[in-house]
Length: 290
Length: 265
Ligand SMILES: Nc1ncnc2c1ncn2[C@@H]1O[C@H](COP(=O)(O)OP(=O)(O)OP(=O)(O)O)[C@@H](O)[C@H]1O
Ligand SMILES: [Mg+2]
Image (tube, rainbow over all chains, first blue to last red; front, side, top):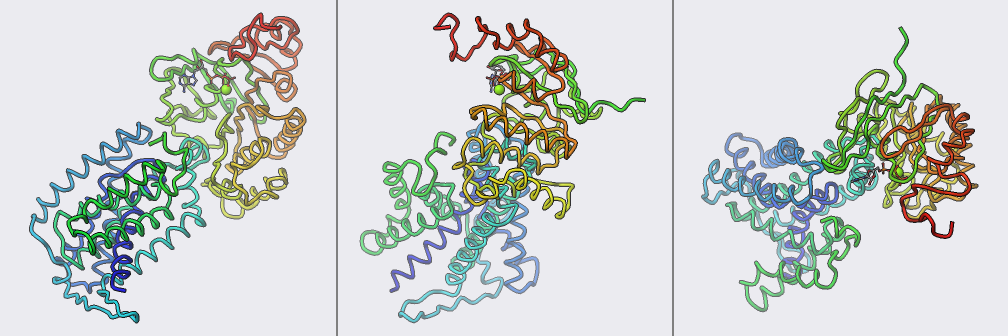
């Protein structure tokens, strides 16, 4: 039972991070390799909000998440917008550069020391015993519920809202989208904002649960194979990818060697890419566009 | 003072990838409410002309290198496509004219009708479904699964939703059975007179285009080779022979390999 709980929590974490990769890729065909760093920045924003104000925890988290949405929009406005229409590779390399820059900035602004935003917010994290006998920390439960809400919201947004439909349209054919009156830069800014927002929510919840230092960016990078396994342009795929990777990781840590944890996602990624290069749910024809 | 024409191109040049010159100075005018046809063999620069008017994005590696494109007197050659669309100049492209993974209804929902209110938008949607009842029947199927004719209807419908005052249509007849082309053409004429649209029509099929249009231009190698009222061009056998390849006997300058000179002709 405890194993199942651990799997669900880890899967929820991966899924919440991975949907950010999917959002940006699906809308603009750009792999955002700075996603881990952006999610870390979101978590550090909580550190600042917590120390600079006496807001109740929930409001502080909300404010930090809202700020991170702004960060994502700014990244698009000041950086990625200049690359609209350039080859995808140029954009991907730019995100790598952005990631390195953000790591440096984080150390500069917040120091490399481990931070504990939960303490400064005075947030308790008591374990909850589930009916099957498994135990889950309050924050982990919050994370699982948040992931559910975010995915439900994203599915509904992309499927039913006019902006969501336009995002899908822009992902399929940006030129035609523009010719139908859609402002591509507006759409991309929304995608970057949402992606950074969801990533940061994950980062914030992880930081509240287990503290925060610059290794958080690595957690973000581990979710990248999850998105790729699912096919990069499919939310359903990243949900499934998260479940597969989390199951393998938890089981291998439990029964083989805890040190495997960092390589498992990448091993699974290789196995999947060998069999289905377009991922489990991705569309096959998208491949040559990467 | 006379009001400026709906659209004018003055000595417009376009270059692809910095070196391939596709247009060498095109002059063209469309008056409000007019149907104007652009004719020419493959590679003459017809599509490029429409794309220059509707706006390039960085992806195209194309640039207007000279001349001026004016909409009611305002230069528009540096505007991004979505702003040109919002001015009422709307393109129905030659290829990739619908979003294949979106349903018919979603294809229409994706259109931005910036200035129009909800009521106006609903009215236009109604109009599209009225004129193309086949689309209403296939409202929730993916556009990628539509037939060529239905896809063309959806593309025209989506363009109409943008609230055009000038519709740019690239190869209405491409890949469609003549009967469908005839139907679509009639439908377009009705819509045009209902809404008071101007249409700039690019066509391979000279007979169809000259029958639709008031005025026509013939392009060759990125230049205007002939221009005049459609009826005059239709009657001019030289033009028929040299530029449109419709006269019996020799067909010159079809470049796409489908009709090689000397092969079986
Ligand atoms: N993306 C591109 N990159 C480079 N050259 C291009 C590109 N698109 C078109 N061209 C060139 O520009 C010229 C004009 O092409 P255009 O597509 O405008 O012709 P067209 O008259 O529409 O032909 P068709 O009847 O075959 O559609 C051609 O010589 C073509 O090779
Ligand atoms: Mg063409």
